[in-house]
Length: 122
Image (cartoon, rainbow, N blue to C red; front, side, top):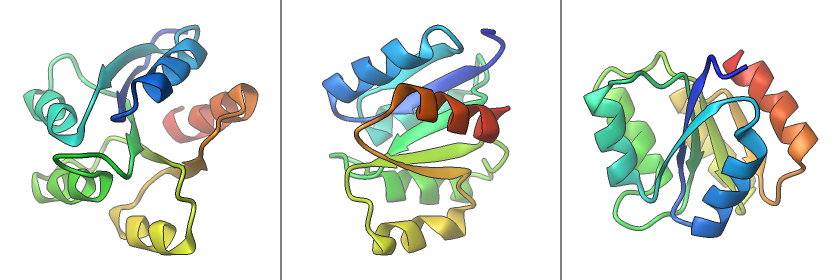
């Protein structure tokens, strides 16, 4: 317990709070309210992040932009779980080339979410 640090990147304050409330008992949780903040946190790299929950649709830099910039900066060793309300096959296919660990649709079932994150993040 608490040996993994998870970064939530989601522009919805409500969704960040929901995820934090679910994850707080299993993980150290940090949050960023948009892709730019999330990238800033990841590129500074201290303390290290063990997994990312990434919303696809956000202002400034969306989730797809974050995935591309992480790849462009050689950051490929952090498991990424995409979280979205838009669970279309188009979004899934667009995210797959970035080697995402999982694709989870909102709203969240806490038990299912935790099981899938344990599988993705260890």
